[in-house]
Amino acid sequence: MDFEGKVLEILPPVSGQSARGTWERQTVVFEQANKQYGKEIAVTFMNKGQEVASLRVGESYTVSFDIESRNYQGRWYTDVRAWRVQPLQPAAQPPVQDMPPFMEEPQPSYSAGAGVVDDMPF
Image (cartoon, rainbow, N blue to C red; front, side, top):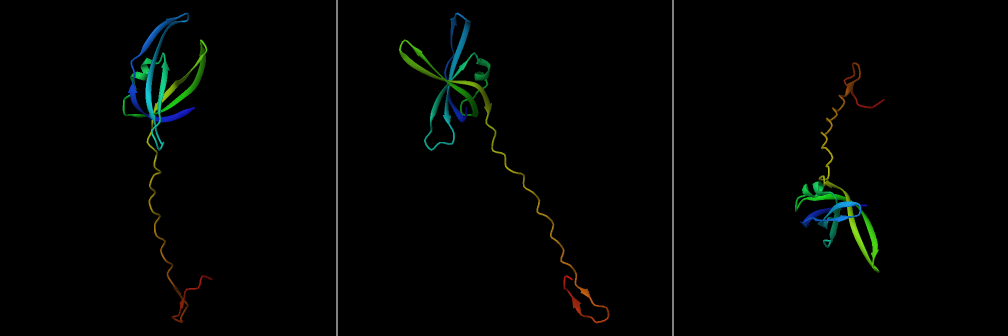
């Protein structure tokens, strides 16, 4: 899934050790764009310190994410985990085309010798 949003806050990284090795988690809070009332979404980045370092507060991005829920000691926890972040491209405006040239009006033809204007198309 994707959403567009502006970075409101970048929280400090949290790291730890697990059976699989060292991990680092960092949360970034986005304000979802195109909503009447701003919706804030806290997005978790796992082992993506370089991507988070490239984000800037106040800038807009397209965030691709997965939602993951897990049960721990009878309680459910849900994470919004980002797997890609791209700077939001401004809406491309179609190029302005030049106006086609005006068509010249056909010149009336004269009947031979009569001096009468013949402007009939056939």
